[in-house]
Length: 593
Image 1 (cartoon, rainbow, N blue to C red):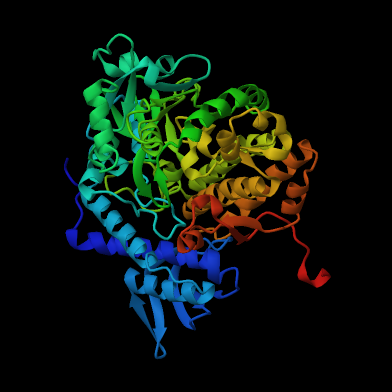
Image 2 (image 1 turned 120 degrees about the vertical axis):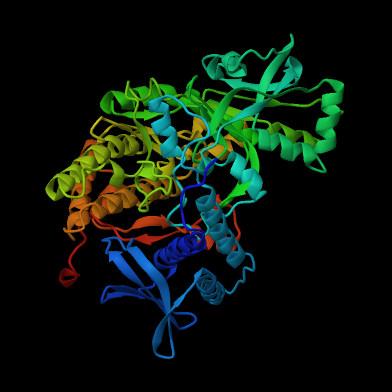
């Protein structure tokens, strides 16, 4: 693995600057912005931390219509009448003081998590290779480049690269190091296998025979794929290690070793792709990434497959009206249920969840024949990949010298993308009570040769929910733990879909496209006006639902509080929302109020 050619003296400062910009953006969105404590002045955004009487500022490279400004240079602090640059640690300390004063509750972990995220980013930049570990066919290579180029992570999170686990192990298994590896395969007696499947067995959906590449499974056993890092962590765990060792000694588990075809980690780290077979496996991984422990809970193994069955007919109907939209389903899951004498109930549940994998539909049929599939999260990134992969909108657009061509391409890109994504997502919600989670990491764009989108694919049924009031009978038929995980009330459903679609996804894409046309400061406003036309048209088709009427009247959008939920040290599902500027509504002018 050859690291990208970067000056070692710049690695930490680059990571520090990017992390500071991200943290400042969180302060603007979740604290200072809603409290009207920001102002643009002389090329800077001034930010007042009102609870500790501190003034910050950062130079703005591009002003955003929705306060998602692009910053450049260091964050500065006003002290003794003079502005002086501060680093991430100082900014994190000030943020800690402000949030403590604001909430009345301290969080001694917050600053360390912010700085640890910076350190992880510095490590990624240091070890980012110029070439992938394993070469694959061109179409798969383009897709994997995109999946593995989300260097900075979530752009509006205070610690997007905070993660537990050994840094050396991360270099072996993280997408940013462009790696590939074989899975750890277990052969499990039929009686101890837990399987959920829709429209075929786990082996049929996963093509496990091909994945094993000649490795034999004993008669009366079924193959269970496990992430190799997960197998190591659980085997070395003081509580679970002895249980697994005893299961292996008694034959309740048979270790086939790290065998078969290599898999490549995607942006979510634990979801792996095998390009030759076009198979995705969402594995369990007992590490924390940003907010959550990335394991497949027992109800998620069952719930993904149950939702696949429930969504099939509805999805087909929606695709009739929107053929450029697809959803990658999850038709099978498999894990291990050890016999009762092997461990306590909690230990056996931990093994079941720790060794569980979900099969996700592949790309080939979903992409409609195109071999160009890109992750939206990477397309919207502002900074170039230090390894040089052409994975951003800025890399796909016409050359810088062709201003009119570049602006026209950016407008075409937006119109196509919005037209492909917005109508089916809103239709699923309004007509069918199905809430997708179409944030940037959950949407893939299928591109034409000119780089313009021809289709969009949503993914990850873990975030897909049913509106409880509209699916009472369906939910009641599910096991209670699956029902609880699959249901949203109306308010929560709308907040989630509106945030993921408009704020997390479209606002970032609009900013990335506006970056391509710096000579036109009104370009982003034009994009929002086009989106407003699409939402208006969809609203009419759907009978003008109340929430879309409100949106078109200028009611603010909901923005998830990624920073405040980290401060509260609560589960991600408990995150609240703050008002986000509505860029396409037509609120009444102030003089008429």
